[in-house]
Image (cartoon, rainbow, N blue to C red; front, side, top):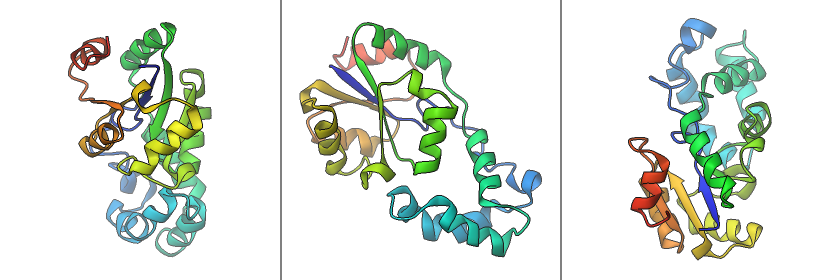
Length: 199
């Protein structure tokens, strides 16, 4: 393994009990159900695959359903509530990187949160590159994602592995000829990698 591709949500970032929007109505006066029905349901696929901008689609929804909020207000709240780093895993990943394995993020993000993760949270200092859905126009469940990462990095499939908490993504990576590891957080990284033959 020359490079490990690491998922963000559920792996590098710990899931928040109830999700990032658990206190949204109390904090900002916006119902999570309304946000889902009016924004995430109809617009998210276009945004996360880079076909539309976050603020371009979120702004009009908020103007109608929560005119006291701007899209920038909500995005700042969302990103900050969904940003608890797993420092234990990151330390273990840093040890792997110190042994010469490249670390890349492989994640389903739109452009704004990708920039927040990379720059504001400082993941640029802990990883060598980031490959994300809006930039690539495809999801990790699609074969195209893996071919594109190979083309971008110059690594062959057999040099790459994916660490992810979603079985469909792990299966897709395996089908692309990559190594793949389902992350549950139940065991230390070194043990998980050793179990899959990456020690």
